[in-house]
Image 1 (cartoon, helix red, strand yellow):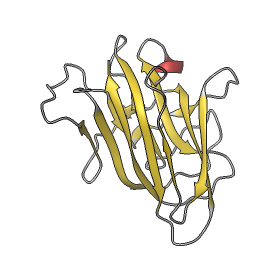
Image 2 (cartoon, rainbow, N blue to C red):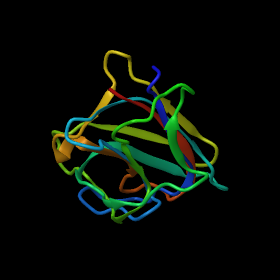
Image 3 (tube, one colour):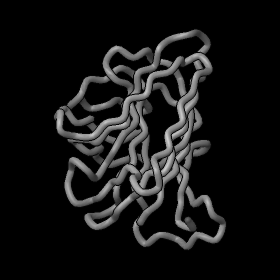
Length: 170
């Protein structure tokens, strides 16, 4: 528990993006392993709508087929840091980003895991916590499992949301 981290974004606007299409900056949250052996256990996703009018948000937490190229460092009020105050500095800091020179592309294969979340962008929210024995994992060994994004799926309204991802480097 002492290694848990919180990747949080105050506000971003997921836009409807088809699978296997590079995502535009500030329309996704991406989390990836820092190297080939790093394992991340995702413990919680929590997001809330910040829109001024009612609209359906269709979001996916899905693995990326093409990784984001040259991620841009997060800037305040966004951040990624340890939840526990006594956490030691990591030798390899995981990749958490909302912008890159080339955005990531969500997988287009039917054999890859996805989680679907739909809610009202006007104050609606979603919260997901897996059982401790079955967290969503990210492992830096191969493209299809080394990065995951939360992004808008085809047909989703483009509404601002904010939230956090709690995860733990294993």
